[in-house]
Image 1 (cartoon, rainbow, N blue to C red):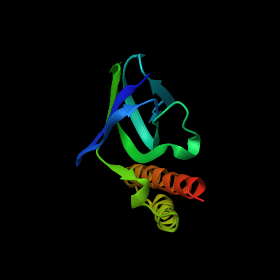
Image 2: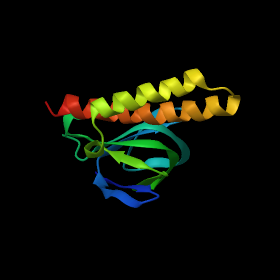
Image 3: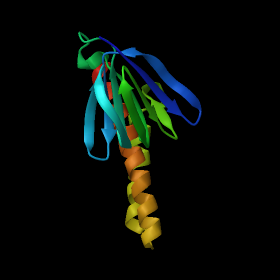
Length: 142
């Protein structure tokens, strides 16, 4: 069994291959998609998108990407997630992600308007996804 999955960002196609399963962050929580999933169009949420290449792959062998919202489209044996930006595990370090998260949290604390607060919260969500990705990388590559 396989599902053709594409991860597409503003910079182009980041991933395009047949996979066993994809875990996708959505506004309603993380959903698992596999071959012959019911057709679906859903809003993606900031978080970590995880790909299991084969059914026998343990969690430590999954491939992970930080995404910052987007659109998930599923049709039969294919699915795609379209987003503005994608971060791979190679592009992020845990210390840098933690420092960026702390700076983002300070933006929330010092926001002086509703708009500034909303924007700061979006920055926190993005850095939360990057930090989670960095922690997964450390945990799975010991």
